[in-house]
Length: 585
Image (tube, rainbow, N blue to C red):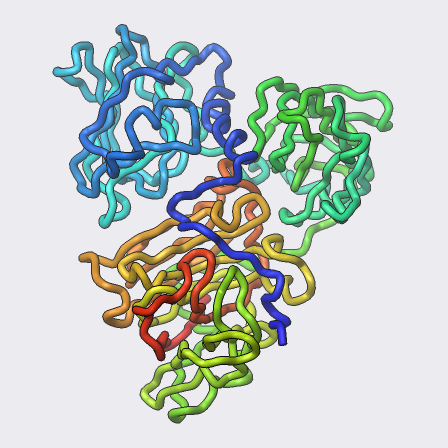
């Protein structure tokens, strides 16, 4: 029997650390950071791109070279050796009046560093210093004249790694006014500004509603659901211009518009307002949009608000995941209320299983569903209906991988989930686990969006992999997010190691995620190993689709596209031991 829970799921086929994006998306990503850092002042220019760059070290002789941080491509990066004292430098070629520095950090960012200027590459003066860096996209006001600009790195966010950034940009010209580190994600403060566009009537130049995008109608851009979208029709709508507008129900005072683009974005467009959907006034215009997320602080008055696209970024049409209008007036409908963010450390336990049952008994059926059937992703096992998921009498759940035939498969294993019993939104979820070692094993502790159980297909429901380990390399764990614009081998994630480089199969380790509306932070033995920041994801990868309930899954896969098939060295039977699963809010 095919599993009713996971039969349509597709997971990664390559390690998350590579962050390898699909070819069509990679070209779009390369433009992002360069453009966003120039929005504040059109006279400001990047003077570091393509200039000679050097560094104290590189992580690998075959990649992550200094030149990859000044190439204007956010799909490439520099990474240092894994030690605290490092530096990176770019030669501008001639003394230059620098106005600011922009850094697009990878997850291995610096908490403490200095920006230094030099005229000769030997004697340096300090232009900026911090001991409280937070990574992400950082814009630094650091003015002065320099030929050589160096970042001196002294303290790491991830102690087991070095430093890495996608782009290091030096700007000249314009003013020294520092734009925000990341675009704002909330409506402007003051007055009574609120979301005006939720579930309001929408119209578009064309719509797509077919097997490839069903439905991608105009209303999907205003449903406050970042996993549904509007797209122009592939037969009649892959042309310029293309437009979409919303009827706010009454005249409104607009203060902000937020667009979350699909890769089919508008390079040139206007935001327009109208009293009658016939006569339009432009309140914002650009010819250099870079896609992903545009936060537009523009004011105007009208009942109707339109995005009028005049130049597409590719041969495709136009597509938006979300088109949100903020302001006052109109006839707004309040979207469903979201739960408040937990305060961490969260202490109120809302789910707990210590697996204290008698030896040979199955886990509590009021908490767990046996998710039986064949595996996905090229896996070799058959997940049994409880025979491979039993307690050992020592306070642990045993998920056993065995070499035995079942339902056309040569191996069996176990997979359980809390779907139908327990779902939650926001909080800390953790489990203490001991993983097996051996070629082909693939233990995982993860979550799926609960709407998957009611028919929303993967990856539109969202997936959060808290822990995945390959039995062939039990020194490395992976945490990854999957969504429509980043999934599989292109998921947004990080690999990491235990303190001291411990073998994760030698003992129990605690894997956890702390989740709120601002992002998801992943921990190994209470040490932060990956921060999936919402702002960074929306501005560099795509829509954030994790603000809804999820359920928990534990499984031990055998073989698959990522770990590879078992071989003669793979030990059977083998066990994934789970000491507990707990959720706090």
